[in-house]
Amino acid sequence: MMSDLGQAPSSPPSSRSAQATLRVERPSATLRELTLQKMRQAILDAHFAPGERLVERTLCEELGVSRSVVREVLRHLEAEGLVDTLPNQGPIVARLDASTAAQIYEIRALVEGDAAMACALRGDAATVERLAACVAQIERAFAAHDHAAVREFTGRFYEQMFGSGAKSVAWEIVQSLNARITRLRALTIASDDRGRQAVAEMNEIVAAIRARDGERAREAATAHVMRVAEIAAALLPA
Image (cartoon, rainbow, N blue to C red):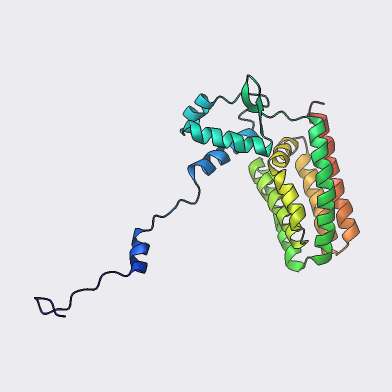
């Protein structure tokens, strides 16, 4: 049917195009997620000391978020083992102790040794190059005293090793302890001469994987963890 002006009326927009026009773009990270990242990093960087009280009102002011967001974040950090809630005192930064650290390193030694062996037997040349690139980045980060980058590329190294070894369940176990592992890593990488030692130990893991020597890779990965465990034991209270 023609309009009064002799032109066919324009058809209404399709439901598909209308939906596209009206769709609200979601941010890549929610306010809660951003707050969680900020708080987690603050604990890892020792902005909050072990045992320090985490007062909700003060955190709201410092972070610029609501009390409900702060409470959610504190609950999440408690589940990660970075925060403890004490009776009549409220949330505090969880204290690190040698006994807990020893248990974490025992688990790491078992699963990382197994993952290194599997990676040596299953990984290809591209895997080896990615692992070697991570170690090179770690070495550069140590030289620049960029401990956050050391932690980041160390995490990538292990993610690659577990993935190439098809150890997805073991990686889930590591991830469940990730916050506490990262916190211990932040402590040990700051110790004297740790950069040179860590890079040498990780290069030995890569060399064993490149040689496709599963037993040597397992031993190198286990030795690396146990060396870090010794450093942590010397730094932490009993």
